Image (tube, rainbow, N blue to C red; front, side, top):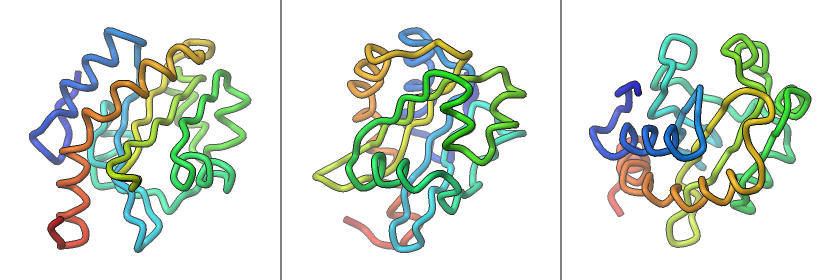
Length: 156
């Protein structure tokens, strides 16, 4: 487990729980900054490849953004083809030995706070994995709420 979150909160423990329940090779967590329409990384199991503080200006397919951020539904990419189809950084993902991804929105009071990104070898995840990860996502709410407040300078 890598303790690389920008918040001292629950994300490292959540990473370990995910590792023991569904398995994970690469784990990152983003806070969603809707005013800028960017995902800002607040935790990473691989800080060299995916540093904390890095941002994605949503360099993913439009369908992914609509599904995960707007409709607040998880995304299951069970194989390398699905990962390649959606993510611009699929080569780095492949180099890390990952060929499957589950992206799980973290939602509070109807608002998308961010995203859990759970990756492992091709074929590692299925609908049951998505269900388990969905049940764990709420544990990231305090850290993502705090990260969003720091990012936009407001308090809720």
